[in-house]
Length: 412
Image 1: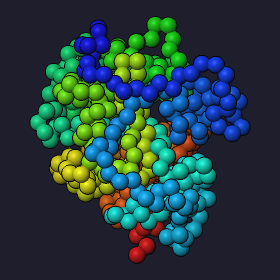
Image 2: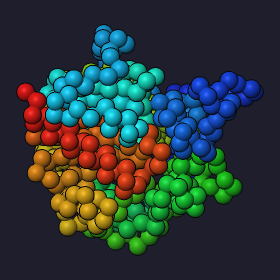
Image 3: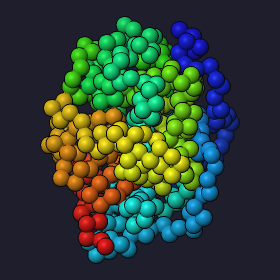
Image 4: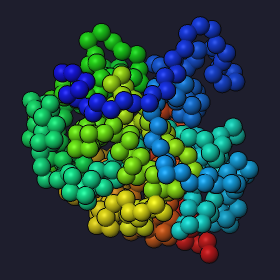
């Protein structure tokens, strides 16, 4: 299968960080050359890598064009500005430190209520979003659905016939959006034999092994399983399938579509970046990096009914559907339902189903784009947990975010 049949033929502007020869340490105290392509997701090197991923993995730009003025106070902003929570949540800073927080932003309406950055991490610095990237893909799909270019009820293979014979031969785009397909895909991030690590290698996130698929397009065609639909199974490959559909209906690279339909409308301070594989295909499921402030703008557009400063991104109906949540009966993830019994998943967003109506984009190692409709607030928390995905860290993180929401109730 040639690159021409897999994705659009337009060129991609790729920054390749690969270098040869001796070099200084990547960050203070690190041995030269550490972390490597195989170890950058592990502690302690991830505390550097999540903010400087472009030095390790090729990236493409998600442009904020048309240009907009950067926030003039960004460079001078205080590292810690949590005074508003001094009364209702006096231990907030300690809890942020205990959960390896790199950035926190609390945005209520258009007002920045609180902001925190760990020492050495700047307000205008981009941070890896991991699977919060999925929620951005979901909005991009929504924009194309609203434009009549994608029909969620149609089969995936109607758009990408190359997936015939794979587990995606039969399910609809909506099944992919809601992650309701039974797939032979192990999402265990620390298991070298898991499909998620093969996926990483195809995407350039780890060193390739002999016999690995040449790129992400090829990897997606290898996935098998019963293909039964209607029950939730979290699978990162689904988001990359959505990105392939996006490329197919637009004839344009995924990162350029995100730029046109989402990022250029945010009045963003900075371009975002996304990692790309050897074919130039953006790692839609986890590869976007952006600032905390710009990520808050993504959350803001959902709370604002799909409208951003530069215009409508998705319809009011699409935004309301995210906030309303998905099929609760389909949600079978015990880790999620134990914390949020009424929870669901829809359009690449986690829906807590609680009395506050909280909805979040969630990524491993502690990334959250948390929406609190009750207070009209967006909470961004970017972190570098030492472990990717454990019940312990999720309990601490969810508890902290819920306490911030309750504290907002008490703040005039």
